[in-house]
Image 1 (cartoon, rainbow, N blue to C red):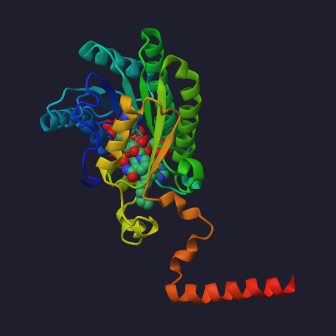
Image 2 (cartoon, protein in one colour; image 1 turned 60 degrees about the vertical axis):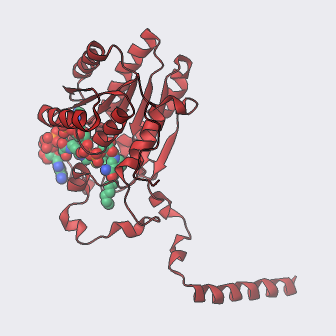
Image 3 (cartoon, rainbow, N blue to C red; image 1 turned 90 degrees about the vertical axis):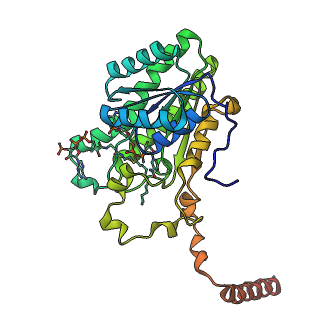
Length: 296
Ligand SMILES: CCCCCCCCC/C=C/C(=O)SCCNC(=O)CCNC(=O)[C@H](O)C(C)(C)COP(=O)(O)OP(=O)(O)OC[C@H]1O[C@@H](n2cnc3c(N)ncnc32)[C@H](O)[C@@H]1OP(=O)(O)O
Ligand SMILES: NC(=O)C1=CN([C@@H]2O[C@H](COP(=O)(O)OP(=O)(O)OC[C@H]3O[C@@H](n4cnc5c(N)ncnc54)[C@H](OP(=O)(O)O)[C@@H]3O)[C@@H](O)[C@H]2O)C=CC1
């Protein structure tokens, strides 16, 4: 057994229909793959219908599951409602939502136009609350105990330069996750989030780690566990949070980043200190301790 393998039993999501926004590419497609393997019906939606159709075919062939692909810009409520209507028509009901769609790119903030900020915030924050609201209304009316999983980031807490619109939007998503988890608990609706560290995808790497940077920064060295994430690791956690095994977990944000976000620890620079240096340092500190005892 290792971290690249599926974790849950084969029927863990049987009987559930789950919408994965941005499910035609990257992490969304990896989560969709695993949900299908665990018996769920999956609806994937995003702007590019050709990408979705190709992904749906691939997903059905690799898993044997049922996939519905619907074009949808998550900034458009009427398109979101259309996805939900088509999902109900095909599968009878919707039980889960993964808000995974996002837009992001690195840039000095002063170089951004108003529109460049809007486009990121609208996809990430507006798209997430529109989709959540549309499904929440449906779940409450139909008395379905739905589950939402929001894909956030670790810099939603710490902030990060050069991705400011994304940081603002992802922080808003976390506030929504916790706020609604409390408010809608009364309806049995759960909301959780995952804050992933680096998981290589074409969408993210093209916009956040282009060749110019990749040649200069070996960023894996910054990650305490010294590697990037494997998509199955994220899919395992996502499937658990979408399943009834996590029925008592709500309002939670789980970081999955090999310890990357811990780098801010004030004494973490001590990572560089050698064993010999520690011998010297320990001696110096113990001497100081002895001196201070004599003084008192
Ligand atoms: C450390 C290791 C990593 C480790 C990785 C760590 C991961 C960090 C966590 C987060 C990861 C992610 O979210 S990764 C997700 C990445 N995936 C995506 O972004 C997929 C979808 N993205 C897109 O489609 C595009 O990138 C996006 C720009 C968002 C939307 O495209 P659109 O066609 O809708 O919009 P456009 O018309 O092209 O652009 C809208 C405006 O933005 C401006 N704009 C676009 N790109 C610009 C740029 N590079 N610099 C300045 N401005 C830009 C344009 O000029 C427009 O403004 P005007 O000139 O005024 O008109
Ligand atoms: N990869 C990583 O290391 C990390 C990723 N994340 C998060 O993981 C998620 C997936 O990212 P990743 O797989 O890397 O990147 P991708 O670019 O592969 O995924 C983004 C998806 O969002 C969809 N999308 C973009 N704009 C819209 C829109 N307006 N309406 C509907 N869908 C839209 C895209 O499809 P289309 O273009 O067809 O619309 C695409 O499928 C994101 O939320 C990202 O922030 C977080 C931390 C780290």
